[in-house]
Image (cartoon, rainbow, N blue to C red; front, side):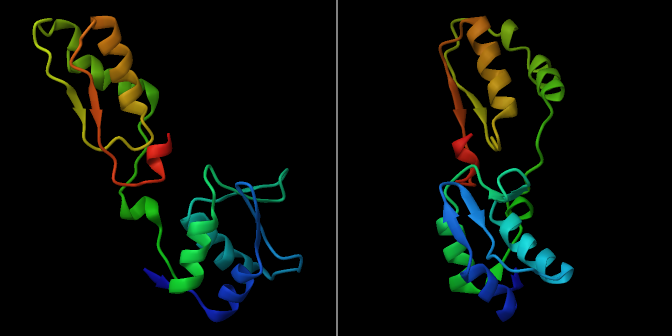
Length: 150
């Protein structure tokens, strides 16, 4: 966790939110200041979008911004949750190695994805279970609430 300086908190406090986009205040920021503001916003899931002229989120950023302003601290949630996205090709290789197609059909036990992240492996597992006509289902666990939206 890192402490956010008061001048950065003031800038974050002047931001506005419309839908899933967070807009910086209409004033010029020097490079180090912008980088500190951007880091705090990125840590809560925002990504700068030039066309939108704001930081776009895949969820409502209000709670995350409120948390930054209330605690005065920021933390890179990808590091906290150890999120490492799995490329589709790797997910297919891994699921292929599980040999789901070769499991006896009378076994109805579910398949567990204990750290689902953005669902890359779960998507491939779901496809393979469907092809294999397995009724056991798929159980996905994910601690990061924001990732559960995927």
